[in-house]
Image 1 (cartoon, rainbow, N blue to C red):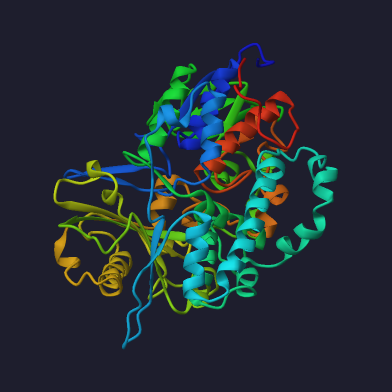
Image 2: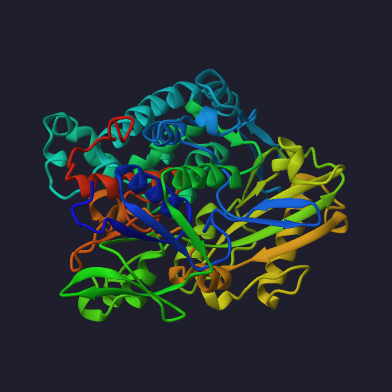
Length: 522
């Protein structure tokens, strides 16, 4: 139970981290109010409906199912009860950049050890056995991360000094000091295989040339574990967590923008809204963008992470999102499809190096949820969500509906549509588009207060991972905690669920490195 007599907690932001935090705090006995500046919940995991189409505007890969399962069990339910999860086969499809003379057929990647090693062996003789060993290592790294790293608040270094961990330090050190790209390139030669194993770095907000090779653990998720889809889209995941927040007593208020976290003697007293109203609380948990929280909602002398700290940090890429409603079927595309440019490294240099630019051609991702879910598009139509990693730069502009976004954004979207048409053999794609919307870094900055217009949070470079990532509580303000993609443990819906659990662990004084016992309230 809360130590403060009032027991009032405010959660800033109604994305998945905010809703999950509210659910856990409510179950713990806090009186929770969630304040969301926008008029809908979901945050980066948003949704848009137009002319019979329903688009997810954010996450679209359901990975780390055991993290979702654990969160739901903490609150006395299960993922099976809350969601209708469908396994995808293939897990995803890959198109390589065609040459003027030749287009490689698409590569379907299926989950399961036998299927994955068989594919690698067919493409590159000897690669099957190498992948088998690679995935053994990835599974070991994943188990270690879940049991030792992801659920640790790092209030102390006790977890890092655990004898079990120290005995594995000889294997861990190279994984932390070597990039994912170099780790993969030492084992595999074919560009397709290298890109299949390197692309998960984008899910971590980084480049395979900058994230540590410990993150080869991501290949355990899609190649060993499998990829699921929550029928109805990721808005159903948000709806499930929202239901649990409300069931545990939380009040969710949209259209309420927090402009200040109020304090007395460096302790939280509540928040002030844009209309001037003050709301008292003894605990504030901000799940808003951490840069915005620190530099806009707190005065300079109470900022744990001031502007000078951010000047030395690396954001995730920005994103150009292209939402397309298409007349007719698109069997050329799987539920998840990846298009890989031949000059892989140049793509990432365009995004992360100066001067930056939108890659052309780009390595990009296409989600076709209508391949699995007939309810996301009208009959006889397809729903496409296209994500192009681009520089985190709001100056690129803002998107719009039916081509009315900023010129640079719409020109880039036209290029992307043509690229999908050419590479995937859909010559009439542009002519069949009946709904079009673009979203760009300027939108992320304006709508989500996203630092530099980034799409995901802080990139998972070595210096921004685990104990080096921003902690989940202010060092200067008592009663102020953080959750979400910029704080511990990191980027993605599963990480955001864990970040909510870390808030509860810190409040309980629980410094163990693993997940909380289930259920959270006995």
